Image (cartoon, rainbow, N blue to C red; front, side):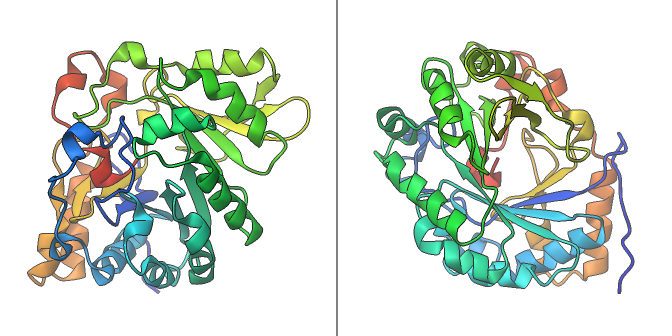
Length: 338
């Protein structure tokens, strides 16, 4: 068995999590991620041969695992649009000491949850920005109904995915009035709602600081009706601050990248659908690992290249975010997931 050769960056942050985008396509047009003005009819998504193949993804996953990665999250775009995704999961599930997770918009979950479970997927996170049908349809911008996402969550829970994490991106003037509705609905269930401050990922969503609803405001809204208290983190680098209800059961999380940056503990590497390695969610440029594989570079040399990249990593965008930095070039969320 190959010995794990851990690597750390300039702030002594190791690689613990690898997020892999398996497609740049999505069937939603969420205004904060893939606005129709940019990703509308005629937009050219990546051709099939530019996507990482399953063999290439599996190969890179094993290299990252040998360097200390212990969790892989499959993202998109919408990952369930990638045909035969369960085949990839079955391959990745053979890697030792590895947790497999996936983030999905839930639109196809009811139909595909069983195959994902059978293939070896450990955890599911569902993006759901409101339980108010009109608000949700407005945010996904394709008139997709809430009830079908809830059906997917229900099916996934019945076959053994529990707890399921529910991600709600909160944007001022759009869905902040449905925060309490979300908290009430999932309270006393095994599932964990994570309220996420609206972030300036990418450059196409027109992000403005005044549209951010802070974690403190979200907590105050919930606290006014449903008393909550803080919990200790589960592990170093956990992005969500944990809270539990004082009455009844249930837990929520707050992801406050804007008002309470957590760069100091970030252990995430990201692979785009075309095989670019990004060392930060807000990075402008990636490093082409696909090219290395397709020209026959051996694993040892690819590992050495990743090691060099990670050892030079000094990203801490959220800690230095200003109105000026937020106007610079950044990779789109649909290319590297959340």
